[in-house]
Length: 370
Image 1 (tube, rainbow, N blue to C red):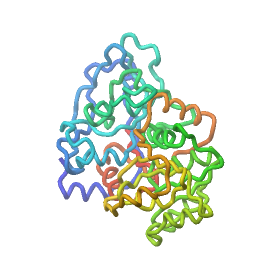
Image 2: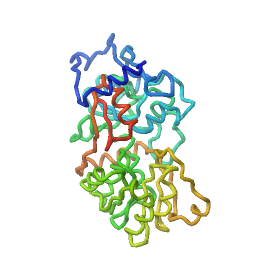
Image 3: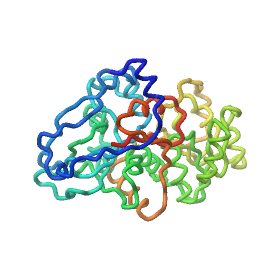
Image 4: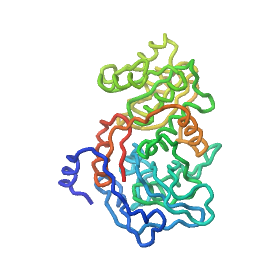
């Protein structure tokens, strides 16, 4: 377990990507090999993560062994560490839901992959398509080990192939954030080029929602916390950007930017801290996609504000299914969309990556390479 002095020293390390070469014999035989994993010994703080050495697992029937090459962190992962999300999850699990790597061994009966295939995990390995089946307990880091490990055995049904043009680092950003944004934009009432989308902040989901909305042809109004971030959002295609720190009534401003009509789709990641302004920003026909709970302060919403608010539908987004993931990957195989990566840390500096995300200063995804 990291001490306070260790944490301080770790945070001073440079943000660089390094790769450790493994023996080529590991591609075919993994008996007796030892791997390194990070486990969350107990919930409460980042420094409760600790490094362990364990035997490399062997794939059983229907499984493949993946050599993990990159993982990306989500706010969900932080919430799991602090016990804000699935507080009853057992201690000792390997955290992190998103990863990409290569198949190094296949179990009996596997037909979808061969050794050497480049793959990424599906966020919810039990949700194949259709309505949400209530399988949150099977998500990585809740009731089963996640991906912050050098090797992992996975059912072949829980993996999809990476688009050829994507690096492992880029692919690792997709399973949660990109699929969430895609599901929000393409639900029962898909966003069209005639619509205006409102995104909040510069986290992974919001940036993917901005990029995907522009691929669709929609207008995007984005909120952020600084002029520097505003410029970067405009470079990514945002049509209008509102600084919510200098303009706390940003919901009214967003509505004014649409000529008083209101926005059509709101990617709601702030939760209690942003919802009151979200109601003001929306049109009478708006869909609010409830995704996150980033905001720490609850500004409160009166019932009449909710009753008179600008929206028709509130839809809870649970990331998406394997079918949603495959739909997004087909789009990405045809269109150029470069995931926004804030920083890349080597596995040895994983603590620094966690603390960087915890500081909320990132613009895009925080990635750890192995």
